[in-house]
Image 1 (cartoon, rainbow, N blue to C red):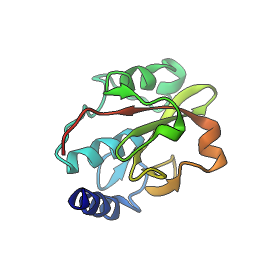
Image 2 (cartoon, rainbow, N blue to C red):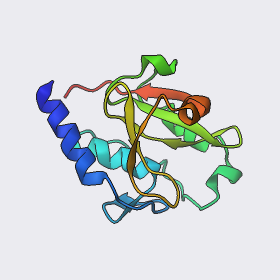
Image 3 (cartoon, rainbow, N blue to C red):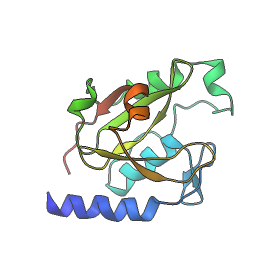
Length: 144
């Protein structure tokens, strides 16, 4: 487990500060799914880089349930925010009542993510903002 924790710390250090970029999938810029994709790729876990369709700037207005539907294809639902653990993928309703944001738990309390017009950062899942907007989480069935 200690080796995994070191690897996660290394990945976090590598990703922190990368700027937001719509549909970004590299160290030059990431959107929130790009961050999840790159994070797990660094662990040797290959997730889909998207859902196979073009990702327009206003995708959440055109097909509001798109992001949630894609997330539901991964692993199993965690449910309650108090059940989150290392490497879970929490998701949030940040636009109206639609899931538009996600990140990766780096321990039981903190997660890494990136917001529009910001840089990759780490936040406490227990902050009121995140608790209020929490919509669920996925847990991958992986062995590391």
